[in-house]
Each structure stands twice: as C-alpha cells, then as structure tokens.
Image (cartoon, rainbow, N blue to C red; front, side):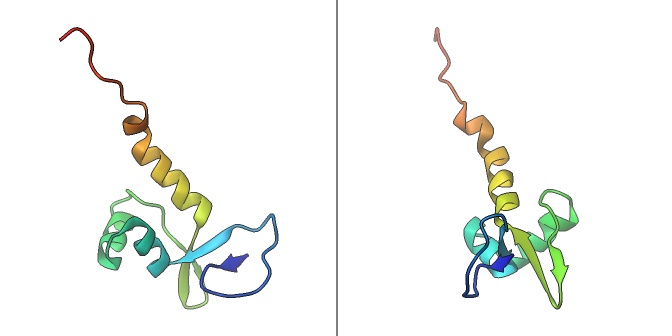
Length: 80
C-alpha cells in the first residue's frame, strides 16, 4: 500500500491510500466537514495506521460515484 503523498514503487494490487488532507482536497471540503460526515455516517471512516488515518482511493471514488449516480442517469422530462 502506498500513501499518495509518499514516493516509491506501488504494487499493482495495492490500493492508493489517501491522507485526510488528500480526501478533503479531492472533495473540496474542510477537515471538519469530513469529520462530521464520518461521525454522522455519510462518509466511510478512515483506517488508523500509526498516528494518521487513511482512506483507500477506491473507496473515495466509489462514494463519489454513488453520490452522483442520480445526476449521471438524469433524463429531461418529456411531454411538457
């Protein structure tokens, strides 16, 4: 597994790990907003490794896909 802010080789089967600030940057939200989303169950909790929490990039992308699924399948109303 590799954190996004570190260097080195990444195994093909290992997910990219995102630090809290990376997740916040991708979602354009503050760390307090992320903490609140985790507390109220609207975003998956990070995994504690040492002193930091990490999120799999795959989990963050899946969460985004679910959030935008209705928008992506939207069709204009007919017959108006």
